[in-house]
Amino acid sequence: MSKHFETEAIRTQLNRSEYLEHSVPLYLTSSFVFEDAEDMRASFTEEKERNIYSRFTNPNTSEFVDKICKLEGAESGYAFATGMAAVFSTFAALLDSGDHIVSARSVFGSTHSLFTKYLPKWNIETSYFNVSEVDKAESLIKPETKILYVESPTNPGCDVLDLQFLGDLAKKHNLIFVVDNCFATPYLQQPIKFGADVVIHSATKMIDGQGRVLGGVTVGRSDLIREIYLFARNTGPALSPFNAWVLSKSLETLHVRADRHCENALKVAEFLESHEHINMVKYPFLKSHPQYEIAKKQMRLGGNIVAFEVKGGIDAGRNFLNAIKMCSLSANLGDTRTIVTHPASTTHSKLAEEDRLEVGITDGLVRCSVGLEHIEDIIADLDQALKA
Image (tube, rainbow, N blue to C red):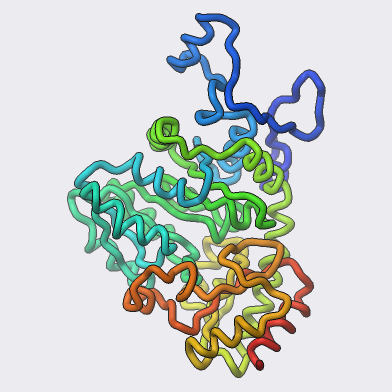
């Protein structure tokens, strides 16, 4: 098999059935039958590798996971009903009471809630370092620290963390390095190359790419994935076969879509950077981005998310959103349709104002998920809304 991303994404498929189908069919079944009592016994003791129950594995889910593993360079993986199910299950499976996490402060709002509200119930604490002070992460490591966790690029501020530096740090202290690679996708960035042990995706975003289904996936070292699989097998956050089928098909076009998304996003970022009503623009492949050189080192392209701050604070931000005509107002991202979101009042609204400001989420910050419409139409809509 070719090692080219595009070919692996398209040609990694289940074996054909007796019907010799060209496109992999849906396996909409909750369970699978056994040949006899011995087959059933051997299957449940895992002496045989086979499908038993779709909460454990399903042909469609397995194909999707196999593709992600090949594209990320991972040994094994497991697919989940949502991205947050993947995040929670990964931590729940790999951590014990009394363990400690070191994390970048800029994380998705629900992940922050997991760290601050739920994991402390099981005596699991988290220490944060700022994305602009990655060199201070080492000072937070304690004897009970088990996981080093980051998103890169971050949600919603589009900050970029040096994965090689963090991978080396995790190896030095024998930590499990976990990276949320949702914004970049396996096409734009493979964290395992830089030392990540586990990589998480919300497949709901760019991997689906059309806002149709929910899904999540965790891939990485086989010994760690084994623990995650056993946790998920017993707790039930499995991805549905139908959603797995949709996501596997979506991976076949990811490279084509991502190229155009990134091309459009860079043009949007360049337009906004010179706009009179904008205070600040962050996009990984803008030369003005603080971590531009790091982004160029570890990413193929800059992704489809542009963060910018509208002059005039929360009122100006609200007026901008109300004036949008073509772009969608939604909390999703990675869609064919351009989406504008106000993180302070939506995705990160549960963060205290102090916490939001510490990670750069000001009242006027807007996250733009740049879609596949014609670039002139995207820019025209953003421009008229900014001038309204």
